Every structure is written in structure tokens, then in C-alpha cells.
Length: 568
Image (cartoon, rainbow, N blue to C red; front, side, top):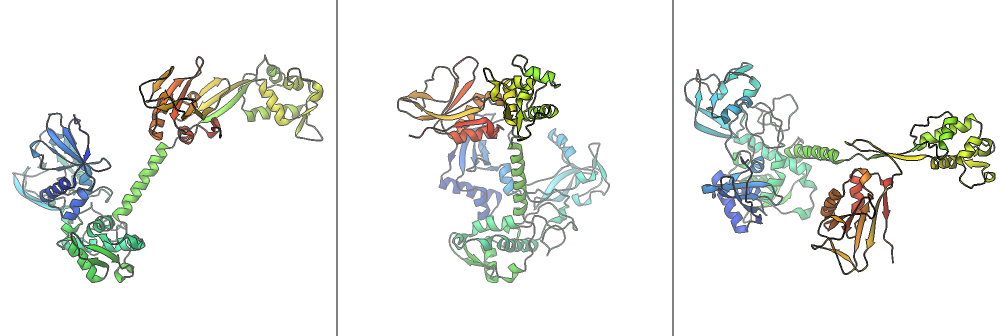
């Protein structure tokens, strides 16, 4: 929205109620909207923030309680608020809009005059802009006088000497987000006041049939402005058929759809929201009580004939909920980290005696074996040499094979006690005589294959005697990165995590994220010993938070070892 980033931003503060009312009134007067729309565009809890542009012009920015920028004013026009894109999404016809082919935009930015292809001398035409007629706009044309409605029917036109497809030259009106698909619209597609009134009436029936009739009695009464913004505007039809006044039941693909027109009280045959609700009260669809400062909707009649005969259609709310659901699923898919694949491997070792078993048994001595592959190797060996115990087929007769006996026998162990062993014990004893390796595969990371036994990540709670974690400037010896933690008198528990480096997790990153998750102090320090690794400390008992964090990073639950604090 701004050419360059703003500078010298001040702290935002809630806008006082009186200032909010003044801002709302200025917007109503400047943009000609109703009081009900003003409440939507200037919501409760509005925040204000003083800003300074890159040209040192002073201004004020207004944002929603969630931080979305809604309005801003700059320089001498500080009293004239300007809507942001967020506000135009809510009320897209606040500003006049003229559509132009995409290929012409770079030339317009460069200073070229706005023109209509194939026209003659300057002429006065009428263009439908965002639901309002702007008369008296001077457009420079080329050869023959032409209006927007009189554009040629050829499939290709020219803009500044470039061929542009006819579909790009179709005039469009602006559409709000999540309203309707982007389709061609001719200027004559604007709705009459009677058509808008019919669609607002249908929106009320749609809301009652699909949502309002399920509300609890305690939800009533509902202020008119709230009812309008929550149960009328969102339930307008998402798709509108051209040249079919009485049909508002959505798009079935048989009629050409148009971009979303202006369907609100302002463009209806009613003069105000109060008049519209009064008409619904006369029909018996709503029960409305005339109150100050605004009417109240006391109840709805779900059994009214208009409601029961209403055929549900796809509303703006339906489209919005569907898009939100798709967006949520997409975000969940992106945030879902695939679990790391951890493989424990074993390699024959000549020094320990397992190398002889593999070489004389005809097996590969240089391969890395998983537990399943190692078990299959043992089964093949004992089957070939007929070592299976005939009385208990789950046991192996070790003493009948000197090669297997010499491999699985432990140091200083008598062979008399090894007449037979369980198959799993044979595999276990064989793996003890082999080199231990491990491999870790993570998404978007190169697989890591290392010699040595992989240890699980340790997570636990400890209580320092005569020390507790608190905010301060001091750091304990060996601390590499501190997040406001120091030791002081008075025992307090802290959560420790170490052994995470093999799983592609950095200590500083984990400490920073846990500091936000747990809303407490964290620190990163070196473990005793050279090259042992780092230890992260989190203030308080945060075992669950630390475990969930590790799981979210793809660490398998099997490789997280939790030490629960001792209960006194």
C-alpha cells in the first residue's frame, strides 16, 4: 500500500469511545454509508498508531483488535481517513473503480493516458463503477466514438500496438473476497433496487432455515445492526444469475454468472435497515421491537410458509467457510512434519568374533544389517545346519555348531550352560559382538549414517537446592545463550532437554521457541565434557510442552526419554 516502509512507528493504543464515534461519523459523511455499515467498518476496540512516512509526513493508522490495518490518514488530509485493502474487502464499493486490461497497467504506471481501444476524439461516456454510475468522466479515444458497451466483438484487440485477448478487455466490477468466481461482467449487469430487495429477503430466509432457528432463546434479542451483519449479509447468494430477477437460488451452470454486485440496504428499495426489518415484522417472519438507538430482533418464525418453502442455496458464508476450511487444511498439511525414520544397524566385526560367523557362513561381511535382516540371517544359518531343537522349535541347539557357539558365547561363560537358546537371545548375543551404527532420515534433510549407538533425547525436571530460575542479567558459567535466566536463592523446578543434536535440532532455536510456548525463561549451556553437546533449560515443569515440541519436529516418541520428577 505504501511505496516504502513506514518509519518511526509509535506504540498502538486503544481508541477512546468518543474518538471512535467521531471517526465513524467522518467515514459515514465522507463515503456515504449507513450507520450500520459504519459499525462494521469502524469496529469496537479500534487501535490507533501514529506513523511517519518516508517523506517525513505525519499520519495516523487505525487497526482492528487483531492487528489488521483498516484506515489511515496522512499529511494535510489527516481528517480524511483512507480505507485499506482490508476495509475494501468488507465494503468493496467505498472507492470508485475502473478496470483495465492487465497488459495496459505497466503503460498506465509509466504515465500513458487511459484510453479505450479503437475510439476517436475525446468524448463523454457513462461507466458503471462498483455499483455506482460515474457520469461526466472524460476518456481519450481513438477513431470512432465508442462506449464501454460498444466494444467490438472480435476475439483480439490492440492496446498500444500489442494484441490482447478479448476476454481480457471485458469490463468488470469489483468483487469482495470469497464472494464469487472471477467471471466476465458487462456494465448492464447491475441489479435493480427491487432485485436487491428480493435477494436480501431471500438472505433472511436462508439464515433462518440454516442457522438462526437453531439458536438458543438466550441469544435473543439481537440488535438490528448485529442481525444485519451476522445473519443477512453473509447469507446473500454467492452466485447471481444475470437477467433473472426472481431467481437467487445460486448457480447451476446453465446461466452465465457475474462478479458480485452491490446487494445491501443502500442499493435496495428500502430507505433504511429499520424499514426493511419492519416489513419482515409485518409479514410475520421476524418479531421486531422498535427501540432506541436501534431496533431489536426478538425472535424468528421458523414455521413461516416463506421459510419452510425456501430452497437453500450456496451463500457467501458457505463459500467463505469452504475457503477457510481449505486454507486450514493446507496450513495443517504444510505444518505437519513427517516423522523421522531412525534405523539401528549392525555391522560384522572381526575383532569381536562376529566377522568369522558371517564370512564362514557365506554372508556379506561389509553390509549393515537391520534387526529384521540379522534375524533372517540367523534363521537361514540354523535352518541350513539343522540346529532347530526338535522338542521346542523356538530354541536353537547351540552346542551342535562350533561356529555359532564360539560367536554367541560370552567371555568366561561355560559352554555347558549353552545347550540351547531362544532364537531372540541368539540374535541378541550376535548383535552384541557387532559394530553398532544408526541412520536418521528427516524430511528435506540429507540422511545421516554414523557409527555408534544412538541415545534418546532426555527430558526431565530437576529442582535446584537453594537456587531458582528468575529474570536477571547474570549468566551461569558455560552458558552459551541466555534468555533472561539466572540463579538466585529459593528452590524452583526447571525442565532440561539434552541429546537432541543428532535429530537436526539446534539448541538456540529450541530455547527460543520454548520461551514463547511456555512463556518463561530459557537458557542454553554446554554439557560437562568435551564435545558432549548442549543442554536447554526451561523455567518450571514443562515436560509436556518440551515433549510436544520434539514430536512436532518429527522426533519419534520412541526416541524421547522422559524422567518424571520424584514425588516426595
